[in-house]
Length: 241
Length: 297
Ligand SMILES: Nc1ncnc2c1ncn2[C@@H]1O[C@H](COP(=O)(O)OP(=O)(O)OP(=O)(O)O)[C@@H](O)[C@H]1O
Ligand SMILES: [Mg+2]
Image 1 (cartoon, rainbow over the protein chains, first blue to last red):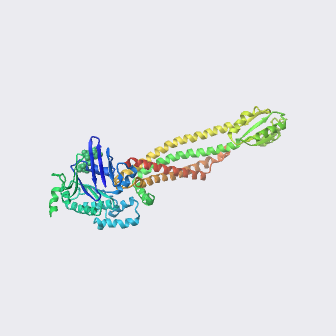
Image 2: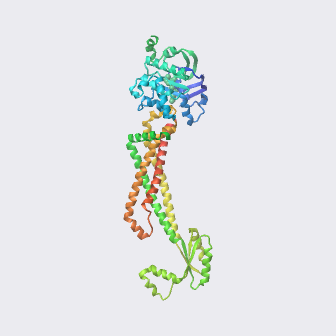
Image 3: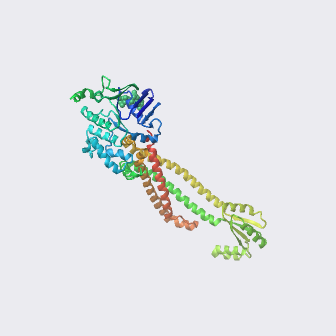
């Protein structure tokens, strides 16, 4: 599904990723963890061909990400839904239009759009806000819209770079429930996070990166003691209620 | 992109509305360029027409024959020329005919010719040629023919005229090329402003898999609209200016130079086609260039 083979990416002197070899299976739910500056975002940017590695090959399904031409990048990105920490919704469009826009981009018919968008909005639980603008929504609601937009075209993989980074713990857990739900529908999920509690409670595969190297790839816990993210300290109570 | 033409056009107008000052500047720059082009164009086609008319008048070589050269021999020379590929017609003009023609040309002064006490004019052969090269060859060789005293032809005048038009065409091409480049830069800078204003949106579009042409759509239309507005304004301006100038000096030109001038309708239609094509070209180029660095990522 996603395969890194001996991938090295440098930013001048800085190391982004070094000799990374990893295989993520179809249907997996993977947490990408590690200290700040470890190379997590680099890993994701490489999958989306935002950057190219110096060495190694990357595959997404049958597509060799490192070999495709620039013209094929849109095709690659349509295979992957993307969610960011800061949502990145179009402010001048309503919730409905934001999601519909992702379908317009790939030239889906109006009919299809009218059928599909409400379904996805209901899947992420935001149907009642369909005609609101992003600024009228809470952070959690905005992230739901972003997720709806990411999955509306049925991507094979959903990639999320700290999707709960801007959310309070309770909202973060709601989003995790949603991602779980999407994962169970068959979508592979790769999620970068600093939230120990989330990783620990979800109990999924964890890939740990440190100084650009993949240092761990196993099922289970977050594995780092201290965390810089605020979420840890505060989430605990919410968690165990 | 075309399935979304409506969206693209709407978006383009929104962008232009947000960016009125720069749009105005671009239109001004392109219009100025087109006006200069228009002047060159008008001059060129009028001179071309003038040259055509002059060529029609002067596409002949006149051979003056020696006094008392036998008529049969003259006619023989004429027949020889008639078989020449580049010659369309050969006319014999006797000295009597020549005098008649001169008399009628001189009009009321024609009586002066009556006092000559004889006819000083020679017999002549008038050779009408199909092209300038033939005229030149004939002119160069004719003097060697027995019985030919002198020749008269207007090749030089035609040559000069042709050179002038060629020069004007080349000069206008160079000036044009330069102005087109300037216009493209101005348009691309204008559109760059709207691109930057929508940078975040474009990045999002790229993330969710929009092709470059999809993203370009509205900006392309924006460029094309700027080009079209310029074309319309320029066509109007050139037409009005030309009309005014010609209503003042047009009649004089016809009278003095005895050549026609190109009618405004013909001019306006052709200018409109050229300006629209040019405007659309400049607008699209400017827009594609303005986004080049932005979309390469
Ligand atoms: N465009 C860039 N130019 C130079 N260095 C870069 C660039 N992007 C990333 N880096 C460096 O590469 C390394 C990995 O960065 P990356 O963004 O992948 O880290 P990260 O794991 O996502 O960190 P965080 O958890 O803080 O988001 C860091 O040392 C970073 O400084
Ligand atoms: Mg990061």
